[in-house]
Amino acid sequence: MRNELFDEVRQEPKEWGRMAESAIGAHLVNSALTEGFKVYYWRERNNEVDFVLERRGKVIGLEVKSGQDLSISGLNEFQKQFKPEKILLIGKSGLSTEEFLKLNPVTLF
Image 1 (cartoon, rainbow, N blue to C red):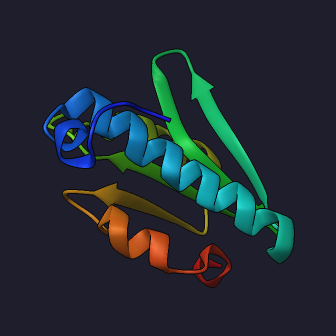
Image 2 (cartoon, rainbow, N blue to C red):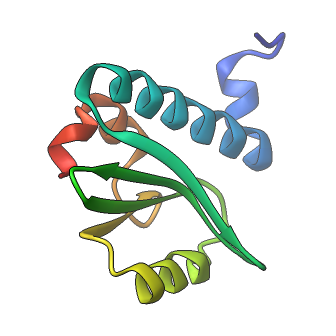
């Protein structure tokens, strides 16, 4: 719950990033309950991946980038260490937040 209007938050990159990441996380957790996959977060030193999905031994790494920082070093390190089935960038340089929220995440597997 916020007092700002949608357009006001959209103009603040850090706040918009938090909102987008929270919306994607809520969508994933909600879908995980009905579709039978697990949602994790991965961090090792300075590397992180926003969401790690696991279903029947398959792993997918998801990174949300809605602002100017397009660094994906965490996603690259995760891929190197764990060899996931796939990795996906959500945001400006990947699948849009809006499109991601329309899909059923289980279809990623």
